[in-house]
Image (cartoon, rainbow, N blue to C red; front, side, top):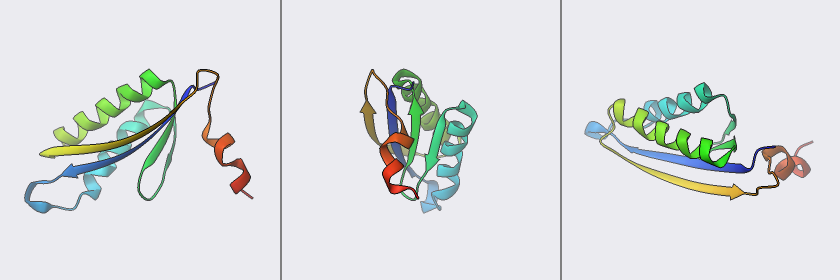
Length: 97
């Protein structure tokens, strides 16, 4: 069972004040390619997996957004860690029909 949930909001600085959405899309592509379970939400994306793996993905996301042309990034991160296991489904099951 995964031991961590990590929610991340990437806030890229863009050249000439461009729209940030293509940069955020690039960051989400990194998550998609990783194979971890994830959920995109309006203001952040939550991933589920091993904490070390998730932190490595965060690093890859930041690198990818910089390579895409961002001149700087703020990454806001929230982590829920439990060595016994944690899951998105378990945390939100009472809110789903």
